[in-house]
Length: 118
Image (cartoon, rainbow, N blue to C red):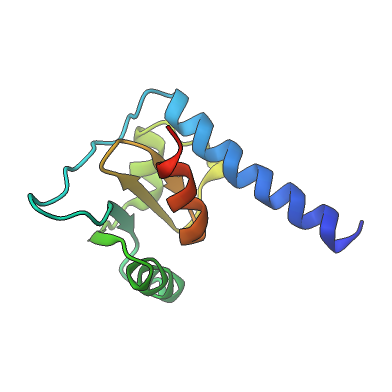
C-alpha cells in the first residue's frame, strides 16, 4: 500500500469521524466563547499524563484557537458515555463552541476550514 493511499485513508477517517460525531447530535456540551473574542474556542477533554495532548494544545493555540482544557481521569468512560465509538477514540476530544466534535490530533488548518464552511 502506498504512502499516499494510507494518508488519504487517514484523512478521510478524520473527516468521517468529525461528521459522524456531529450527526450523533452534538452529545458533548458546547461552550460559548468569551464575549468580545473572535478566536474560535475548543474545549478539550484529555488525560493529564498525555504528552502528545500538550503538544497538540500548543499547536492549536499557536494557530489562533482559544483552548479550555480539562483533565479527565476516566477518559474512556467519558467518551463511551458520549457515544464515541471505541474504534474512533483517541487520546483527547475537542468540542467547538458550535458543538462540533474533533477526535484526536486533527490539524488546526482542517478544523479552521471545517468551521469556516457554511
